[in-house]
Length: 317
Image 1: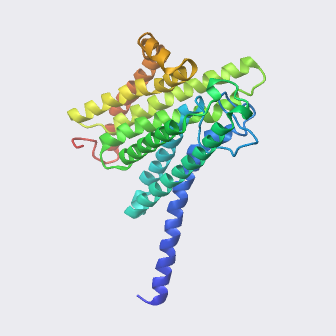
Image 2: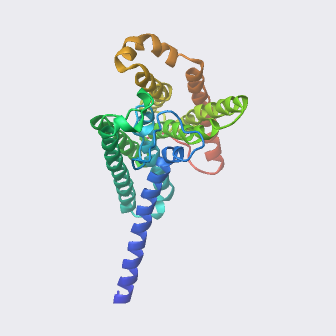
Image 3: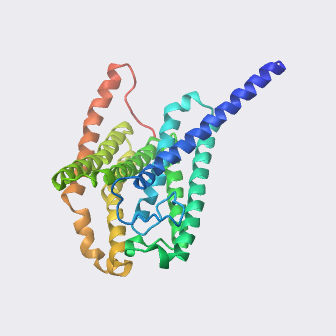
C-alpha cells in the first residue's frame, strides 16, 4: 500500500470514529430532550425551578423531577442500541464501543454539571425562593447515587439489546419500551398542560396516557413473538418481561408519593397502596394487550417467514 493509500485509509478511519462519537452524543442529547424542552415550554411542570442566579442544570435534579432521571439515561442508551442493531452489519465491532463510550462520557459530563448546579442551589436556598418540598434539590450524594444507578441500568439494557441472545433482547426491549413511554410523556406533557381550555387539555391527556400505556405493551408483545423459542428459558423470559411491564410503570408513582408525603409515611401506607397501583384496570389491560400481541405475532410470524422461504424460529437461546 502506498503512502497516499495509507493516508486515505487513516482519514476515512478518523471520519468513521467521529461519526460514531456523534451518534453517542446525539443519543445523549435526545435522551435529555424532555428535560431541556421543559426549560422553554409554555407551561413548566412543578419541581422545575430555574433562576437567573444559576446555570441551567442538564439533568433533572429536584425531588419532583428526579423521578425522570433514569428515563432520560435509559432512553439515550436505548436509542444508541437501536442504531447499533440497525447498522451493525455495516460497522466494525469497535463502532459499538465508541458509541457507548461517547454516550457514557456525555452523560457523566451532564452529571458533573448538574452536581455543580445542585451545590450552588443548596448554598443559595435562602434566596432563590423554593415554593415547596418538590422544588428542593436532591441531596448531592443521593443525586450521584441515582445517576450512577441510572447509568448502570442503561448500560445493562444496551448490552441486552445489542447482544446475540434473543431472550436478553426481549428483556431489553421491555425495559426500553417502558422508558420510551415515560420519555414521550415527559416530552409532550408540558405542551398539553399549556392548552387554554381544560376540556381540550383533559382530552389530550387521555390520548397521551392511552398511547404511552399501549406502547410498551405492543413492543413487549412483539418482542416475545420475535424471540419465540420452544424452550423453558423463553417461557420464563417472556413471563419476566410481562412482570416488568406490569410492575415498573408503577415505580414513578410510588416515588412521587414518597416525595410528597415522605418516605416513612409512604412505607407505612405501601401495603394498602400497592394493590391499588398494581391491580388496576390500566395495569391488567396493558399486560393483556402484550399477551394478545405476542399470541398474534407467534401465529403470524412463522407463516410469514415460511412464505418468504426463511426458517421459522425454532430452538435456541
